[in-house]
Length: 267
Image (cartoon, rainbow, N blue to C red; front, side, top):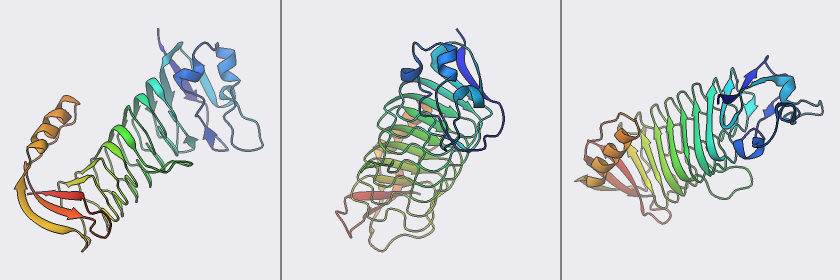
């Protein structure tokens, strides 16, 4: 059975709320019922059938073709199944997601993966501000799951992150890991200013030294970390090719708050 596919007909003249297009909502609906679902965000009524050509039948596997940065809430609240996006995603990609998988060939807007609790998200290109941060109406950021981002991220990556693993292939913006509670950020190309600001616990792992380091992080010297070897092996099993040197300079902080977080700068 072929994946249930939504092919964008033309550039939308308003932002689209695609949160209803998840397997749990679409299960049991016929094509006419799916095409009648409202996805508009203005007073002008807009349905799935107005914006998308709908093909396929398998509601456990969804595909979006030709989407752009006005297509918001793709996979928001996802609790199972798989979504593939051949194009860009707008704001709140996979926000509050609980389980399942999302893959995006392009980039994503603000609040990608915000407050997600489980599952796996892969974005090949850049994402906007507050990725893996705090979704609207929530008090904590990412609470579980695994995220890989191929490009750069905006500011506030992993803000108030509570659990999970995020791998960034490019450079993170300012305040990466800001007010982090727990979890792990692995940054290949460093970060902007104020990384780890207000970090209480958790790990920020840098393959390249960040632009600057807050004075409230205490240098503990160079050490060997066996868990970096274990992490490298696990990432290889997930298809993420990365080499982690087990030796790293460890900085503890942010000492302005609880101070049990860490920065590991590989050497």
